[in-house]
Length: 82
Image (cartoon, rainbow, N blue to C red; front, side, top):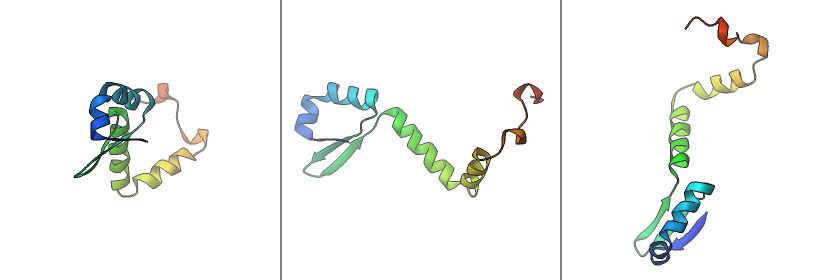
């Protein structure tokens, strides 16, 4: 995580935002009224999706169960009636 103050953030905003986007590097910006975090859109969307999955009862367990399932427990894609 990159740490900076609001003055340096204003000065280096383009470079800092490019690093957040390109390298998924969160930015912690400190101000006299508190701190703020800037995330790439990709990181934000991943965080929201993780929170959603965690909020659905038993979905996390089902995903782990499916992840550990044997290949023969699944059907081929061309066998599915869409």
